[in-house]
Length: 196
Image (cartoon, rainbow, N blue to C red; front, side, top):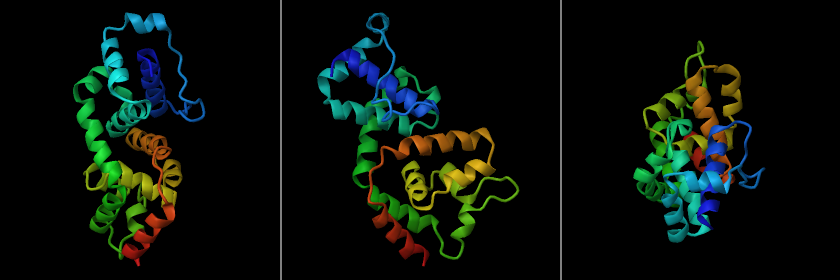
């Protein structure tokens, strides 16, 4: 991947995680950028270094990691990625490699079979318990995504919750979902074991 392609990849992932209308897979990672504007950027050395040090797949995973791990991808700027991106990427890789264990561990901690349904109930337009657990960092974004793959709860929340806090989380879950490739049936079995 050339430095310019690396930059275009960055823009494509930024659009994917920040814009409702853009889908990385639908548009095959394409983004509008001119070589002229790239050469005027003060941070182009970062993209030049990335293109030399990482393979194409690693570059893509690097940007997914940084946008997925950021609490508000809209406000993530390239300077922050340059400063903390490598640590974020390393931590994300560890999580990705132990995704099944992460989900099982988190689910065992926060799911109580007697109150499982209550975790997803919205009362008086208040955030449901599962969302509160996420804000308290008791569960990860990955677990939220996997729970949606199993239970399809995000659409229901979208209809009932209209606050900007939920809208940000909802967008993150929906955008990150396409990058999590799991055997849903296997995770569903784990959830059944805990709940039943």
